[in-house]
Length: 516
Ligand SMILES: Nc1ncnc2c1ncn2[C@@H]1O[C@H](COP(=O)(O)OP(=O)(O)OP(=O)(O)O)[C@@H](O)[C@H]1O
Image (cartoon, rainbow, N blue to C red; front, side, top):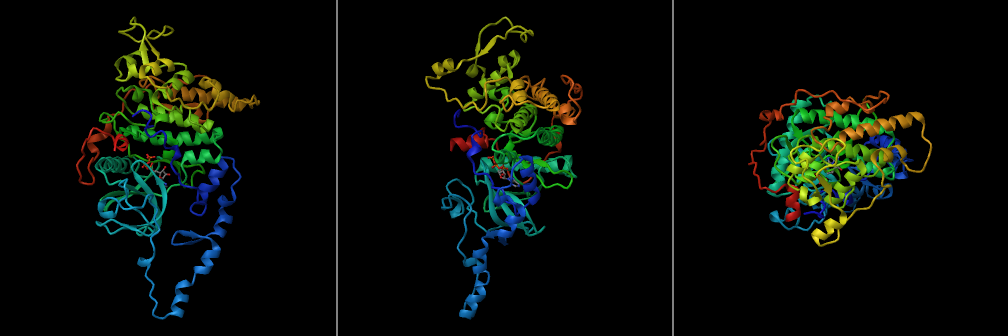
């Protein structure tokens, strides 16, 4: 499984290109946040003038003009001529579009073969979603932009692969998101994507969401992966934390937080609004089923090591995201799990506590036991641990193969130096910027804490000066959280909104994807 990349290598996935005509507010913000000159195609008004839209399909003006009255022209030439949209050749959006399963409706990957103007119908309500364009393809299926005939607006519909493992996990997504939306965030104030509907269509579960914009990885790419200004890092972090407070209250672990799953959102209140999406890997705290979770770069130490996990794993991923928003590049872009872990140890200058290493299932994959003096207790502060991370050579000798190691995109520096000296060209920083960066380092240290029990909770992080905007004066001491949120107001959560069975195959959909 290692090396298959988990979901960490999905950076190559085709992500939705920025479309200025669909939400100019997103475009304006994206350009501002990334300090970019809008490219000619991204200039909102200019682009809008250069494209015309017919049923959501954009055409070049020349072609549009030539074909505008074509049906009328045909009728004038031949009064017998009858036009039917049904006879139009299908414009396929799914790749590959060769029929393979499900009576020819699905391709070889069990993806529904989608084409422009296909109607996804909710048979219960007769609500129709007319497919317009592809937004993204992921592990679980395809996300398409559709026209919602009920609201007369665009929505994003996730069409899940026609396979039991994906179906069941998607049912979980519906269930958790419905709980989050309706019970924990009824007024849509906490930066969590809204689910609008779900339906079964040709053996595919389809979930309709509000239409959002570009994801944060796309935004970083627009800025040539140079990172965002601190004020944007702060603005995004605050909103993501706000969503995480609600998730923790609900006892929900997202399990796949990463820049690709944070999307720009239209908002009247703030120019830099974002929302958390993709609860397709989420689960309830205390009811964790899978061990192969989180995208590799954002995977927490406890998940890597095979230790029981909680909502604290999302805080680790969040720490990785915050660092990446500032640096423009992932903090731990390891090519393997070992590579990720040894980067953590190098950059953070520490390692997981002995208690965790003693109890975790996978410790021997990464660490060597070098002493037993602290076998019963955590190593006292200042004294070394009973474990040391294996060297690259030791891992290679054990596995009898060369270790795949990822590229180091930045100098081999500890976190504080990385942040405070970025972009590492000795340029002089203003005093306020220096202080703010020290605040960011302190913030990151609380999030990227190896011990999940000491890692800050979302609420604790929300009160850090980096988030509140207060001037940073010294290390932040969060108020201890006395009352631990009851594990999942789970009883209140309906796990089975679609009426199907929640089957536990033992394989997570992510693993399933790699084994079939
Ligand atoms: N509500 C939305 N509005 C606009 N685009 C969206 C929306 N939801 C998803 N997308 C696009 O589709 C992509 C995939 O969505 P999502 O992450 O939910 O699917 P997935 O199959 O779980 O993907 P992954 O394999 O990355 O986990 C997103 O990165 C985003 O670009």
